[in-house]
Length: 467
Image 1 (spheres, helix red, strand yellow):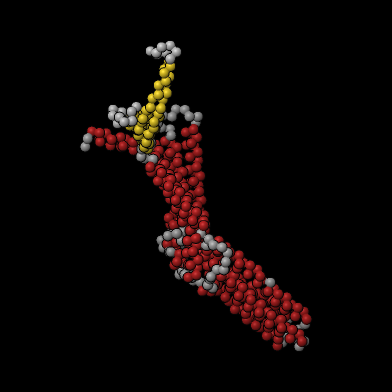
Image 2: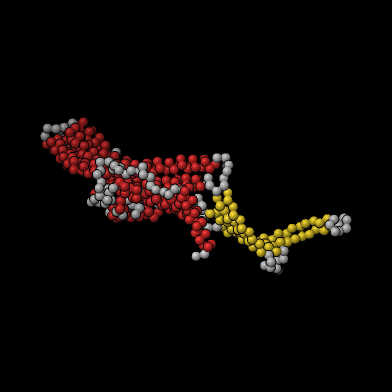
């Protein structure tokens, strides 16, 4: 190994040691804690719903087709991808900062000089025209002594990773929005079906009550009440149809297409995974894209603080130039070589407090980024806890709601029979039981919707959908 090689290696080692004294190595903040992020959940199993692909979570073929179309066409997702392209370009640029720049300079200079009274008779002026041809290369390179370029590159890398995580967050939210709106649409379909069936039954009931009035079993008040009961069901239908239309339009926006009908299945055929494992709270750091994005943003702020520190120290810049210059183009390369090498060390002495202000600002922004990182973890834990509890409550209501509806169906039958064949009841009892039945049936649909949407929210809250 030559003496010059040893000298170069020693310079690199010295620069690395000096850089380590000024800039700091990133480590995840120890003040962050994922303990007890899941309320009332003693999770000890690393099995996690978030690791399931969305095709396995949502087994409805029509829903899967809509999700895939959304991933292909959604405009917000396309914009998120373009953000990644821009961040990748910045990262590539930051890597090139390690290399010297190189410039080519080729020019022709024509100089006119007036000579008066020099070795010539008085009153005679001679103008001299000189042409100079020049071709040269120049380069400059800044040594990364204090880690300025390294910090810049690491900040660009963290920015790139943050945009990638942001894209993943958009994707998980998109899948959740499509699924939630799809299930909402199915619930409206079911509500419309039950309401139309109820309306048909109440139309027949009006005719029955009219016949009973003719038989002097009920009064005219019962007839009027039965008609009002019929219209109470009928007036619900336009609102449900409007909700269906608006939900279809919302789904089409998510799919990146113009409003139109949505092909779909039925509410009663939807399936949920057998095991809704939430895993460990610490897995949110890897699975939740928005949490990962928050950490990458913190790393950007951390490296910007490193960068701000380097401005307090001198910068070493090497500049070199060389080429050919001649007055004769035909002899351009003959005895016309020129070159120069300059090494400059710049130490900031007084710059109106700019460096100090830069560091203070960077440190404050780093603290803000840390707060945002902590906040994202807390929000993630809250969303998992809420979604899991909502799912559990929906399941808890299923059995009771089914028994309630069964009892109300019997109540309607009994009161109608009592009204038709005896005087043991009046139409008010029939009216009350019918209204209670419709309300229970619609609430049962909402219970099913709550269960399905809680599944969607839990899957998104755990960070599922982007892998």
